[in-house]
Picture 1 (cartoon, helix red, strand yellow):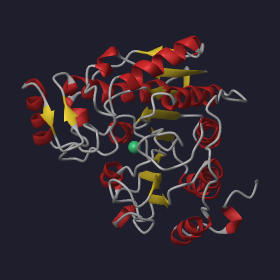
Picture 2 (tube, protein in one colour; picture 1 turned 135 degrees about the vertical axis):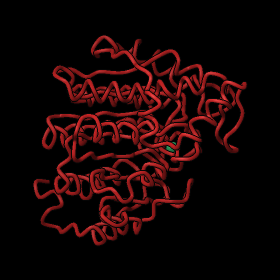
Picture 3 (cartoon, protein in one colour; picture 1 turned 90 degrees about the vertical axis):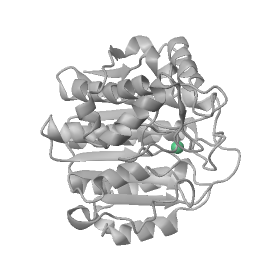
Picture 4 (cartoon, helix red, strand yellow; picture 1 turned 180 degrees about the horizontal axis):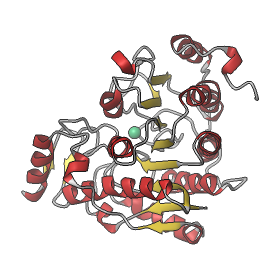
Length: 350
Ligand SMILES: [Zn+2]
């Protein structure tokens, strides 16, 4: 069994050099993975383009058409944050397709887990409009394709990006087949993700939001994963775990005020690897979302691959956050209450 990755040069063609979400993020990541000797340990997967039908499992045809016209007409802006350049439509189709390729490989014989190193990111892209640097919702499209074409019944999406994945929550808010779990700085962009947002109708209880105050770091995030995510995942019994992997919660990130370290991210991904091994034959597929420190992002992604490969340690030259972290006790109690997570099931083995 191996760990795979997806990368394609087209992901660099969606670009705006002055914007925090620019092509250097992936260029420097690939350079680091090469120099640190990570790439030879991974199985490369060839990205394909998502079909329009696959994208339309999440996005409205009028939005897809509008995005294509905007890109092919030379580009522009979807909102004050979200640019479209000439090759953005093509890049977005291949980003969604790259994630699909990673899912398909993982559900096959010889790949255990995979990381789609794609751009543009996805978790803010709503059915009818892109926003927050995101054009197509790569994780949501992958979940819908997994349900529709791979006949899965239960998909867990874990979103550890700094920001709440409003659009992923929106796509599955009333759908009990997809459990959306998110940790995020709160209140913060995009404004959603209150702990009382727990789903609707048949989907009630299948959205688990853990809004965190600024200043939570390695200890707090790990406690949230151990005491909320682990019991929630065991109760849900996913057949695959998809991850919106954002690294903007690193302490040095210019957009966030959270205090995760590279080692902290490594530990969170190890928890996901262990959960996937316990619950779903190791089927774990990550897709890149945010992360805007050009120094921390490559190291965090390198540490993520170390965890996926089963290494005991990760390389963390940046070290821990320079300040003390805040407490998560209050929010953990609130989320455990609203989702009926008793002490007895919250990781009795810890
Ligand atoms: Zn983010």
